[in-house]
Amino acid sequence: MRHDIEFDAEGATLRGWFYEAEGVPGPAPCVVMAHGWTSTRRMYLDRFAEVFAAAGLAVLVFDNRGWGDSGTGAGKPRHEIDPWEQIRDYQHAITCAQNRADVDPDRIGVWGTSFSAAHAFVVAAIDRRVKAVSGQAPFISGRATYANLARVSNLVVGPDRFTADRRARALGEPAATVPVIGTDPGELVGLPTPDSFEWFTTARAEFDPTWPNVVTLRSVDNFYGYEPARYLPDITPTPLLMIVGREDGLTGGNLAASAFQTAAEPKKLVFLPGGHFDAYTGDGFTVASQASRDWFVEHLSTEHL
Image 1 (spheres, helix red, strand yellow):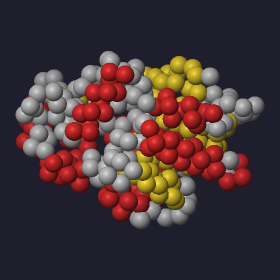
Image 2 (cartoon, one colour):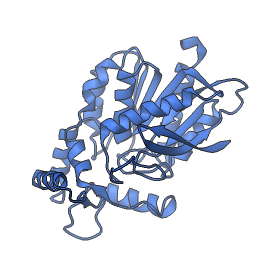
Image 3 (spheres, rainbow, N blue to C red):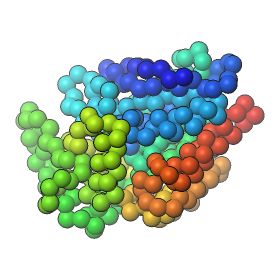
Image 4 (cartoon, rainbow, N blue to C red):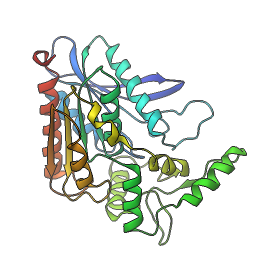
């Protein structure tokens, strides 16, 4: 059974869903989930949550601040992404889950995808309340991702725009924005790859027609300096699952697989056929969702704690 929830995160009200663990009479292990860069929980996350809940896991799914149904806090613009705020919001979501009577507070897992996979890894490294972590198609390096986007497209936003926006906002002007995906030839966008355009166009049409296709310029600036791979060695002894698309040309499948080698045991690497967005549908979804399900069931069991 699914319920609407909301909780406070440093003055912002974050909203989402709570899925009861099926077939579990007492407090259940719980997986905390959020979506990736600019996405909302309605874009496929219910499918993963249903798989987890059917396996006896409670699930807390929330929209990142400023996206979907979640608020921003006083004086902050919507559609802005600060990775460190989102990391803290994962921690607030963990606290929300721990305070529920139907959740075992000592059996918490975190799950993320793309940009939020990076957050899940960082949270697992810095917050020992996390007893297992899974990240699919993970964002590994801001600089490497930005350089890759610049190689494949001349439509990526340049650093000169970041400087101008910083100066303008310091003078009280509104936050500058760019589209997430392009609709006009030659338009500067946040994600200029063809598979990004296809995935967001489909996800908006089928699941969340209110998705705005806009993101603040500072959000692009923020991801440039975000290097979550540096936290991978610190995740141990928390069990780490990384799910990587072999042909991921957005965040880099080879980059993720290489970064995985810096993490210590216990860990597992699963490869998916296809690219960055193939974990959400078809065979890719089956492999990715079942791999995470099995990882959490195994490592959030009482025998592993």
